[in-house]
Length: 143
Image (cartoon, rainbow, N blue to C red):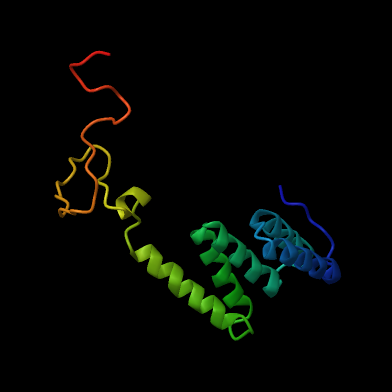
């Protein structure tokens, strides 16, 4: 249930300032909390909406960030942060078009359950070859 609070633009501005403090220290969760609280005191606040989008973007929630960037553009289509919002939306949409690969796949690993492709490595004469553990006694001989 959403708590209804009286319209208070000064409290909203203070929440945005405190959110900026947390954002600069890369505490995106705390910043997001303050920006959302600012919207409770002043719905459709353009700055708080844009800052929520940035915090979500930095946190990795691209779908949420996209929604808030678009909300900012509905509030102020030609506002001071409109160009940044449009650039961020283009970047997010470009990322959505690319197939999302797992980190291991980006490093060349096959998905689990799939046979690995054999890629022979080039012979490097300077690379040492370890044939046995140098600290263990030679095999077949006892001390």
